[in-house]
Length: 388
Ligand SMILES: *Cc1c(COP(=O)(O)O)cnc(C)c1O
Image: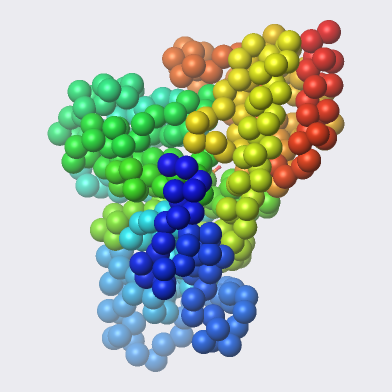
């Protein structure tokens, strides 16, 4: 899906406003009636009530994964500020509901635990995936087992114990793309979980392509400033109930201040993603012409991530930058660079890395909002320095 297609999407629920308008207003529609402009942050860990029987009933309902929007009884169950972020993200992904977690990995863990609880612990994974996702699935730490499959082989890998197919597109760090619509067809009745961290709903809305669960490391573009950790899953209400049950019992709730920051981040998400994508596309073009760059990976869907293989020493290159920051993570207003084989994908063994197409020469850029000329000057200088 192109940016324009996402922009053109009109919400049926909100007077037909366009997607970018909803990115600013979603989760805040009640504020003016409350006499507020900024969303309130509710830091309560408990909620008073003199109606003990009523409170008990409400707690039972929450324990079954319902969330009626009323007082949450206890801070681990739900939170009004976090709910605003959930409501907004669900709307922007075109999903019925969303459930927010303390991190992207907490969100993924909840999906896996819900699946184990449902008696379908087998996962089909499509590589490459985020390094820790790959490791969590490979290790079977949460009681799942995994079969790795290429797109096109997924239907054959599915058994009657398969509860989830996991894919990332564009994928980390190769930026390889999978046809999500075709993959969703292959999955049949088995839910497809698409990690949409890299594309964000600005560039791609996997629910519209047939995915059942859309996962984000909200730590990245949704927050967008490198100062908040969070995760979120957009899905249908039945799945959301299962995820809320897990969140309640495992304590992986998103903090309300993080919920506030993530909601604030959504308002600028379209502007940030489009501006950084334009810079990233230009850097990809210039890198392709650089003598020390052997291959550039930039996804068709666009986005602010670029990776490239270099004949220079990739570790020396990452150390030589001055404006870019050598660091893991991505999706911030400032640009970051890292060497996946040494850092983010170090946890995978060498054979798995090779299978996933992660070359030792690969360098990954997360492009921020700096001027393209300053970024290029820094990169070109670091490439020259690392190649000599
Ligand atoms: C960072 C990341 C995750 C994990 O999210 P955390 O917030 O770090 O737990 C999952 N998937 C992708 C694609 C990521 O970039």
